[in-house]
Length: 92
Image 1 (cartoon, rainbow, N blue to C red):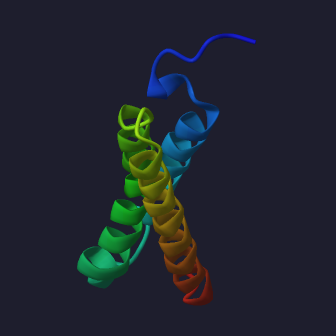
Image 2 (image 1 turned 60 degrees about the horizontal axis):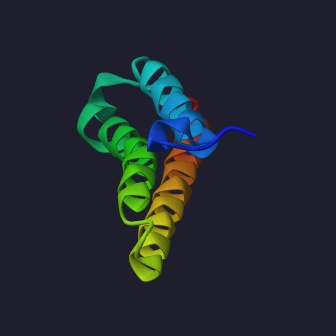
């Protein structure tokens, strides 16, 4: 097992980054009228998952701050799931 030196080495960071990129590509096909609502929301929340993981890594020496940022990341992931459910239900 290799030592984790940077947050980019974390599998959860890598997977969340890749997922945000996939969501970005998929959301390019959303209708223009959704540009400032669903499209923007889903892109921002999916990117926030990764950003919060990065912030958590920076605060890993402080357990409460670390856990709080990971909790924020989980919340953003759930928000992204909700936006994806809206997109799926609306056949976007």
